[in-house]
Amino acid sequence: MLAGRDLLGAAQTGTGKTAGFALPILERLAQRPGLGAVRVLILTPTRELAAQVHEDVRTYGKHLKFRSTLVYGGVGMQPQVDALRRGVDVLVATPGRLLDHARQRTVNLSGVEILVLDEADRMLDMGFIHDIRRVLALLPAKRQNLLFSATFSDDIRKLSGTILRDSVTVEVAPRNKPIELVAQVAHPVAKDRKRDLLAHLVKAGDWRQVLVFCKTKHGANRLATQLERDGIEANAIHGNKSQNARTRALKSFKDGELRVLVATDIAARGLDIEQLPHVVNYDLPHVAEDYVHRIGRTGRAGASGEAVSLVCPEERPLLAAIERLMNRRVELRKIEGFEGPPAHEPSSPRHAQAHSQHRPQPHARAQAHTQVHAHRHPQQPPQARSHARPAMQKQEHVRAHQEEAQPRIPEPVPGYRALTAHAPQARTPALLGGNPHRKR
Image (cartoon, rainbow, N blue to C red):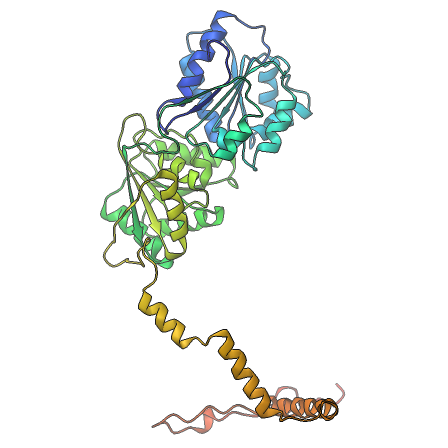
């Protein structure tokens, strides 16, 4: 990095990637002070991660003479505009708000010397790639590119080749491998018992700080509300919340004032919550790499942690994909009273055989249909059948109409004597409105 080479850096979560790129950058800035133009651009996928990276950069360089500012959405633009006008050496931003400033010509990126994509695999996926390409078009062609993340799929590595030039790849640990200090366990459970099991684990284990991941914003809100009703202090954080609400909830959680924080994957990327003991996958992610980032919120900076997954039968394929990615099995542990079908075991062969015996085969159904059709319609000349079909259809239509008009009387039950009140009554418009033909 100090030599100016492009870099793709992969390291496990919680191992200090932010310091890995921030310290060399600050050293280069100290060797050659700037003139107030943006020299370093750091892009992150979420507002919370952007705020955290900016705070780390300021902490690392508090004895150096440089200016930095933070640009993200959900808050007013004018304070950001004022900070940019005063001059900035290091700009930490989310792509959407940065492009807003570029369209309003309140930021000049023509002097950027170093570009950092933090959580680069997420920045280069389909959710961000179009904004990233628009940002790249605003930057000078000659610059240093630094890409960092805990996970890089083969597709993302190929795509990174379109950004990096003469790059070096540094991998601190095996690919897509979570840190060993995180104990992983999966609890098989029925889908409709997940909330009960979560509340049981929190109360029985006296968990004081739990980060819970849901797959949808609505699900996060609903789960937080239900946990509150169970007497567990909880709040939700997701993209539909205002930035102030998200900041307050995260601060309360970090300060230990909030017992359970229910989040979508905006909290899975890079957030550093000191000494977080428990992470729960209430819903397994559809992208296996997101699992590694989720559980990486615990077990950081040498501390140990526990990652718990609540796995219903529908999520078995997701768990299998996660295990293939990590190249290891997740321990299965049943909780008495909440047992669901085992997450790794297929359905019982005996049950499958019985089901196949009761279910008619396709050729058998076709043969039965042919026999019934032949019984209802004996062999006739084609011309006779064509003439008879309209009349038969008309008779069937009239018969069906008559059957619908007749009240359906339930079959008698042994030992039960029908009362008059149970007898079906014919509809009489006169009871509701008198004579329907009388003028009102």
